[in-house]
Length: 195
Image (tube, rainbow, N blue to C red):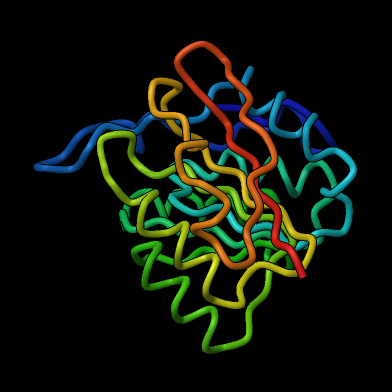
């Protein structure tokens, strides 16, 4: 996997070892370069100087891309220790130690802890495993907890066969559905934090 744009364009950030399957671990499904390009085209006016959270980071490609394209800092959250270590290795290799922070823990635990410690983000990108039901859990949690700054963006990557517009705006206090973007079997859903 390589970064496709910005200052770090072309840098390799994931090795084959993070793709190997061990025990009961689920297969890794990195965000394709086409979807990443689309994602950062959508967020191009928000990314510069932002605080970026990459939930379910996997290889960390999206978070590293955010840093490459001008994010001030990025936090990577990944429950798999091997994948987290791979991201930590990349942080050291590229020299992003003061701008990149890797957390090895489940996304839901991280969000609760971040809220308690006062961490806030301008952009949250969440790409939970497609087969899981974690989207239904994290959306209300992000809506409820003060982890996304006012005016901040929440971008969810999910299967296009499962559009999130079914979750009505009435079910959220502060998150507003903005738009779905479809790229083959993948869909990006953009929500914004209202005041």
